[in-house]
Length: 328
Image (cartoon, rainbow, N blue to C red):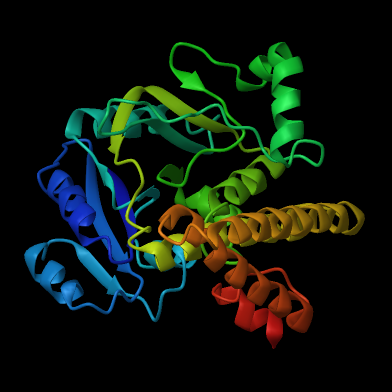
């Protein structure tokens, strides 16, 4: 019998996690066994032990700190005893027919598919985008990417090799990621240079670099609540938006040459500073518009990060677990 580890990384997303675990609680199969592992990134709000008691049949791991999604996934995988790993966001919900179909598709096609996702639908019935292209030098930023998509539609459509069962994008979202332990070990798991965001893009890029195929199974659907649990207030929203930018820098550092990287880093820095400074000035008389106030906090966070880059000679987020290693 195949054994599947379902690994969920949580940080203060208890309401969503409760629904997710409730959906998993009653799933039993004669074809495979399930172990559910929840890694809490030190929410430190008292709920960890409440959930550990409520869902006693699952494994709960209290991480050493808020070490990011990639580290949490790796901690969960290190504690799994299964040959297959399914990484889920805490704001997802799963039912047995879709999980059966999804896992069965991977087992049948694992000789050709390294990592698999499935369709995701939100509370409004809207399906998430699945036709994802890896960031390239010429298409890393929004306007050049939009122009490329406009003028090379036919070329792009051939990339995905879509059929009745599968789409073959260049990367899949980290909300639903299924792969074998063999593939996980082959690429050394999730890259802990990333604290939050783009670690899924990086994982798929590294899998593709060793000739692994990335796919989305079209005949299974998992519910994924839009927005997630990371944006609780204005400070948290600013932090997560800053980390989106920082993760772009981390991706550039990991995946581009020195010359290409220098240009992309410079273009990103200039663009972010100009945009956030402009919106921060506009926000001064419009102090009551919260969306504009977020930009001031992002600008402050980003400038602090740039000082860290100069001081420590790395674009890795200071929050990432690899940051301490890079300093030593």
